Amino acid sequence: MSDVEFGWYLPTHGDTTAFNDAAAVIPPSPELLHRVVAAAEAAGFTYLLIPVGQTCWEAFMTGAFVAAHSKFIKPLIAARPGFMNPVLAAKMIATFDRMSGGRIAINLIAGQADKEVLGEGVAYGKEDRYALMREETAIMKLLWTQSGGVDYDGRFHKLVGARAAPKPLQKPYPKFYLGGGSDLAADISAEHSDVHLFWGDLPETIAENIKDLNARAANYDRRGPLCFGMRLQVICRETEAEAWAVAERLVARTSEADRAKLKDRVATSEANRRVQALAAAHGDRAGDHLWTGLTRVRPGAGVAVVGDPAQVAHQFRQFIDAGCSSFCLSGYLHDEEAERFGRLVRPLLA
Image 1: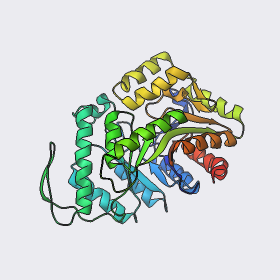
Image 2: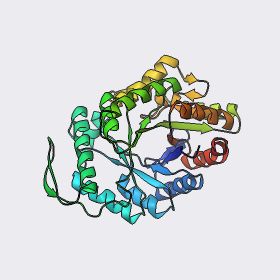
Image 3: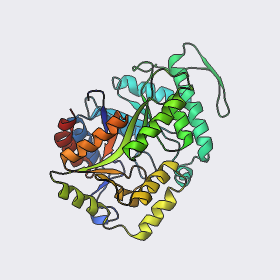
Image 4: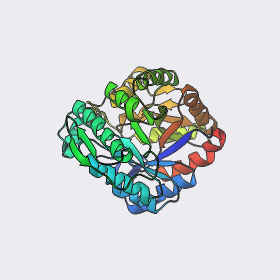
């Protein structure tokens, strides 16, 4: 399975062994992030997702820290519409790519909760954010590939003779990822992404979604095929019983009020609604080793693969058979779970 890549997650908002339990929280710090970076690289992960949001440390600065404290792992850094002028974004990403020796990938994010985005100073609604992201991604690609000045007359941006130096080291430009569940996200992925990341579902559903994305991608003049992956949690222990015990401890302190607050927070996100719908339809266990319990306590990727090493590897094989070739993973604690995955599961998938 040499064509399958694995990425890990950098918890710049802190870590925990039990949600909604103050005593279990590990606050973010350079020391925590260094431990996770070192563990992920030692375990053989090829990229490191750096999250964004009000509670997260700034992603580009953190990505520079990652590059400086690692040898080969590649920071996956968000390009969010409306947060930065696309000419400046193109220069920053290309400069990072050059300075790091070709170690940056781009995460396209537009579908976050409206309240959170507004709280960060961006007033565009969801549909406008996706339209703006399509425009800004196209501008960055033009700046990286077109010789001479770039003219662009769009709905949001107008450029005359724009240039961005340097050009990226990776050719024609760094890899683009997008995770999302809406039609808007699917259309952007079909046109611009290298990898579309699903947020966790049944393998048969993922296979159908891949057919849909491939049909959409056929409508665009792409530079290469659209690949697919999963954004998942993983809880692996030496025995299945131990893995499930760890999973239950993660959510044991969560109240109904906590759950209601989370649902309100993610109400405008289609990808979050899909994850919540999976939990509502199947309960805590969407499969023998697919657990939806984390949807009670965290937004985003709330589906976890839970079990002993052989069971976890088997679940990943099912997703690979469905058409996935990239897995962006996380687990608690993030440095310890990265080490376990590299030691216990990766050899079974090799």
